[in-house]
Length: 336
Image 1 (spheres, rainbow, N blue to C red):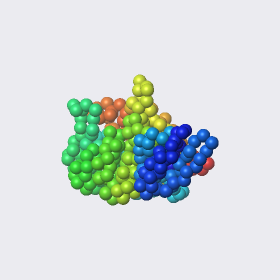
Image 2: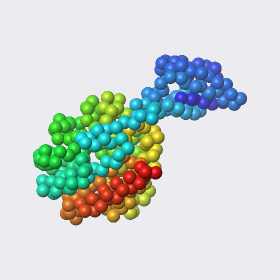
Image 3: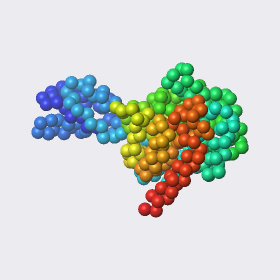
Image 4: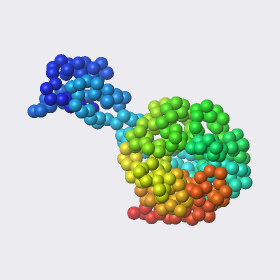
């Protein structure tokens, strides 16, 4: 971390600032330039709030060199590979996860599960508790959905991804769920993140509606700081100035950027990015081309009658066509 001091800073002001830096357990170097004095702080500054230095009137600018998320940061070429059932997310392969926004009944859920298995897809999304914008919208089946999950898991040996909205749900969900999803609304639910850091199951962490890359990675740091290294990041689109045609804007640039900044795998949710089924294919192919480790896609047997997110759900036939195209594209990219 580098601190640039204002012109005409007094010796007393510098003394007070350096004493504070030393009190933090850090060392420093003072460099006198022709117009400014610069203090180079040495040591682990990842846990230091850079803004705290602006409390000193002599401070003109603070530049952070070390990222505030040391456990998440990429410090070597080694990547984190998260094993979910039969899939290894982050190993260079493409993992496609499909399923309904929310479980509605056994028959439709079983029908989608059967299709996934037929096409060698081993992870299924399954909404149990659904945080909705309106309190009058369908909120999920709760315990009834868990009973359906158990029956389908036992039948097809699929791994299940489902959203957890409160740390109090952990004991209820844990026997049924293989990956805990943290939705966009809960990306900065720090008590939930800390609780998930204390478990030994994968966590799929979605980016918040309007959160920066650094804020997203800081949320991942909460989980890693607790000891849970099995984190999958999920880009699901962010809010921009225009939502006339899409629900969100898919930040494709986040995929290569995340791979430069961190060792964690990243998948993309084109369903929530688009908010409409007819754009999902193009966004999915773009995500694969950009290097995503996987896709999370909403699938429904009859989207017109879906109780949640029908407009952004693919019919089963369309989903399978997309799976085939994504696999072909991945093969082409791997051969380059």
